[in-house]
Image 1 (cartoon, rainbow, N blue to C red):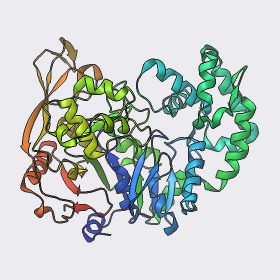
Image 2 (image 1 turned 120 degrees about the vertical axis):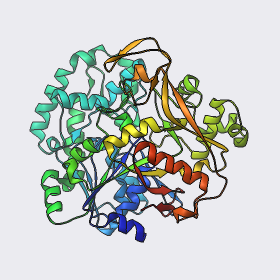
Image 3 (image 1 turned 60 degrees about the horizontal axis):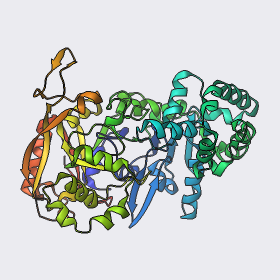
Image 4 (image 1 turned 120 degrees about the horizontal axis):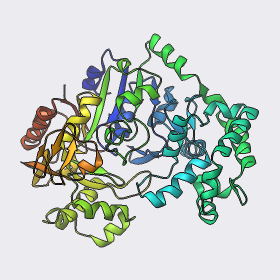
Length: 501
């Protein structure tokens, strides 16, 4: 491990990796890097709707549920799926099989007995509802799962090891969902349940839509037998770990701006992606965390799915385009000259150019990610919640871009509306992040422009040797958000970092 990184981690017992944007910022790389330091890696929020891509020795690993630190399993490090995770057994079993085929035998994985259990019902209702509402979910059942958790009707991992109790609880659960299930078009339900994520129709029943016996058999036999040795009481586990001075790394999922508590309303995930939610989902308190690595893509940002994005290149056109299902192959066929895209006066084309440069395509869904300039108003909001130490990722992506913009305020462009104790009028300047989507959709970014840099920065490890124009951008960012950049990532490899003490 880099000596400066060791110095940064000196005397720390618990550190966290959390995203300050809408996700897809490169958290996986730093979970992987910090796993070398940690004894225990815990994932505490989200579910299979999160995707972590790690590049190691020129090979990519994509995980949706299993903690990214699993690549260090053979070194005796313990990886834990926490109580705050929406647990999809099928996804975990598939990922364990994939890893084993790659020669990585999973031995030190642990699973909280309190994790909420994603059932076929949750995937079914999520996918049918999203066809109508167009929120842009991943269809992994996360929203319906957390709704049932709050409504106190959900099941937990521990239930699958008690067959009779599981049957009783599942029966009551399905009875409570009968009106919903009866409202579904049976042909559509059959189509959804025939997907590989739902074991190719194993849980489909022509009369009741969901097959009770098939679900009981799968969870209490197949899943329970394979996972029994992984189950722990995480509350007790982490208390013992802290008492014994074990080094703990918390792995965040998604981003602060997607948090159910802090994100852009309606267009959110269903868990709290902040450091508060992450700590709780790992059976810890926020004050147990000594250092938060706030991951921030620079000097552009991305969003997957629908929702407000003030700095989006191409605006509404880009949002609709990315929601339509276009993928990387389509764009490569339609837009062959990246340089032409980057030099275009058309923001929509420039956004596609950024997508090519950063390979901004979803790890979980394959969707094109919407691209835009870095929003410092949103970042200032995020760091006030996730603490003020930030890690700038993908900084090398914009090398060669002549002019770089950062958003420093918004200009309101909607109808008069009462907001936070006053009436917003068209033309008003907004200096703080309004998380209400109906307000944010009518915010036009106010930019400050900087000169870009042309120098190759991937081999630089000394902050002072970075191009002056880049350092000017970093200094401005720190001052604007009242934060501190502690790491600058200059490439995708785990070693391509500058530690800024």
